[in-house]
Length: 244
Image 1: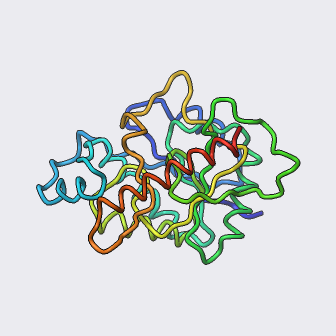
Image 2: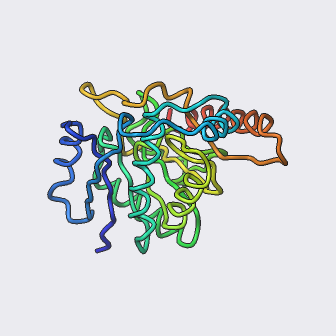
Image 3: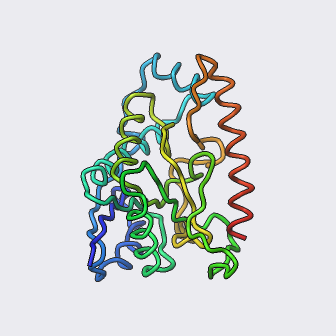
């Protein structure tokens, strides 16, 4: 049996992670590691040059919680980067809906993606997503143009993790996915829900912080942002079509 590394980013002094940890406690298919999340109040105020870089890349300065989220994910991705096959990173408000499929689909994706910079989002994005895969679709994994909308739960190869770490540290921080050459995929039927009745996002509104792949056309970053946003809008329609 192949054991998959699974890293949980846990909020300090919180019980948000308890349902997730309980669901994984006796499952030997996963090697679970918990790392404490970096919180916004722990972050130093950014340099003026960092603020300018953020505005240039994302159209606005990031919040301290967004920057802290980036630091937390970078710490988690370092553990995946050091693994042989790759593994899974979950935020502590991820709620697993199918443990067997989480393992089998993640393992299958990582084995098929050996030597590639591939990331698989494990989330159900729509509240009324189907519970079973369509019999007419043969594919398990569906490629996006941009990055996945959220980083709550994802399987990634060591190369993808390394690329994300490198790009996050070279550029100003971004909460979910730094611009990279990684290729993102989603599932028709997600195996993770984002939160439950007892949880809410710590870093705030999702729509204003989605990053997406970073297109660099000479120095025209405004044009790059327009292309990135266009790709994300196409992906939103694609996700709606696949998961509905």
